[in-house]
Length: 96
Image (cartoon, rainbow, N blue to C red; front, side, top):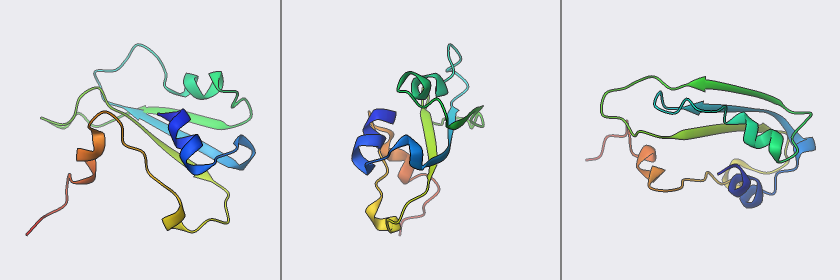
């Protein structure tokens, strides 16, 4: 997912202020920030946390929020949803 975010948005480590990773409570075998370190992000502030255990929420889910210094407009940046996680865009949104 991180590689896809980087490629889709043309992110360079030097532009990253920090990255914040969250995982659902069922994922506890590793820190997702380790993936960023393996990609060479050695100078970037990284943090991990566990999501709130909301009943019937999507399991086995990793989220990442990357804060970057950029001249791009918000509509030029793209969120990435993999393996059915696009349903998260609809959670909490009322439809009429």
